[in-house]
Image (cartoon, rainbow, N blue to C red):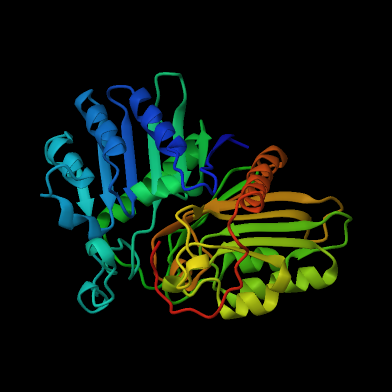
Length: 390
């Protein structure tokens, strides 16, 4: 099992913000040694500090290259914007493309689905919708760490500082890092793949897997498949989740089965009309096991600047009839919606580790505690219009 570290953004539900994750990513960028590599792939970007940190690293002699969703391209010439800071300041080797803006082959028709601030569907690298990644790769740091993978649920956006997010850092696994470098290079090639997604990467002991998306035409749902292998035969079996978008009814159906079998199942989501989340089937299957936070609902009580943006599932139960409970953490950029499964560039980590599971479980406890001790209401969700962004 490679060494892991988890960092969380927990601003509370008091109309506040915090930059814990951004600060950590800036710190890692500052530690990158001259001659090392930084590779980044991101969806939405408007935070100047992290882009300036990448520029500064490149000026120190670090090989910095960034792959972005194509929707960011509109800001290249906007003075003072984070994208302008990046593209005008970054330095990389002659002949290299320091900053790549992806564009799916059917950008024109999909771009009819327009989001505020100029973001459009059709900026993905391997999929058909968006490059939803939030991934940083550091080959060598001055503190002695090497082959560092930093995967977060947070976009590099101002409003994300008001959101509960997580950052998973995986260190010193050369083979895993090499696989992620290969994945990043595939993103940079900007070639849509209609049949096969990038292959799942596993550590030698099987304790960590990285699943890649989209799975456009074929390819199963790894979250649904894993839940199918879970049973509630052991005392204290529990499934938890904190999802910014949850619309896949088949996943909710498996959670319902586990509830009926005796597992404790607790799911946190948020009300978001733009994403039809939580989905109607999700609400029907989970009922009172679903704790819905306000975010962007139509009614005043459904709106709040602080909410969750996490994409976490925790399992602590028998898997494949194991005699002991197996602790699993699922996290990354991957929402439990069809866009993440079938259309977006995404990463989902699956990690079996008791200590990491405990750390993530404490984070979910904090979300619930902060929500319950604030003045925000528990929301009863309804059916919503679908849209693939966030």
